[in-house]
Image (cartoon, rainbow, N blue to C red; front, top):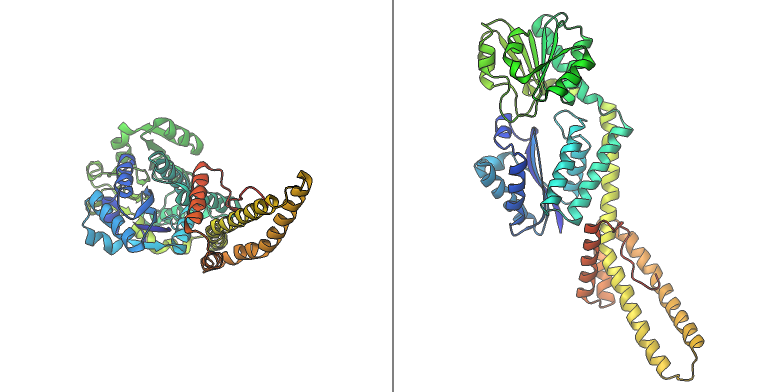
Length: 445
């Protein structure tokens, strides 16, 4: 079995297409069951955010897995498969692991280093587990991605990149308005990006600062932090009418700042900074007289220079190290069933030979029998120790699976024995009792 990631994001698809493939919570559950019912997918997780739709899966065959995912994405979203395929990216095995870890660390986000992706990835994992579409292998990989994301934020300053995006956006707003200071500003939304924007606006000495959010308590809390005023979502029209500039970043699927709201301003100039994806601002709004819209497409050209390069590179190093460690553990785990089967086979031989020997020595007392058994088991254990330790070490290198295959051939191990151990490992992984160190049989090791 191998990991596969298939999806599209802000890096591979235009905003218009991303808006068409947005999947809500209920849609995610339906898509999970569509996918898990296909022939080549054994585990499935769907990660749907404002700027990506990704399927992570454990697959039996590469081409079959890609085909299954592509067809189900097209059927579920209503987007033509040929159009979808033009913008899909595909990562397999080692690269799929690397991509997953980069996503968790925030390296693949529109706003590099943003923490929201951790909550979204955790939610995707919880949903997949509740729908029973994720088990040991994929679940373990995602758990690692979440851990790596936390590590990236605790050990580096990657969070600064998100603040840089807002700063660059507001720099453009400052130029477009002839100066932010003293202007009336409206922030739509009260999430992490909106909080950064509101704080930055306050530091740039805007005049009136108004916060609008669907949940009034959150708007009130943010307004209190930045010295602004909170208003209910029902007052959005009047708030837009009064504003000189608007910053919008919500999780809404459809437009929040519509042409209807902006037409009411009687062509008075206004600049709107849209930090959301899907877009909060209706596309047609940019064509209205007096309205200038600055969105993520426009910011994309200047974002690269705004990233905190040293912090990003530090996170990349963390991801590279973690990918290497994870793959080494996976390769070692794959050889573990063979090692266990070999030891079990050796124990069977020892038991059979001791039974035969002691049957021919009826005069041997219990102490003698115990000493003979201990000695024989110690000899066998010493003979097996070096090759089993060495095969585990070799298994951590690329191509290490071939050493396990050689062991199976040399000792004529029954394939069903290794398969039984492998199934036991999966069961332990699903229960959370498997630590990745390998399953140890009872008896000498």
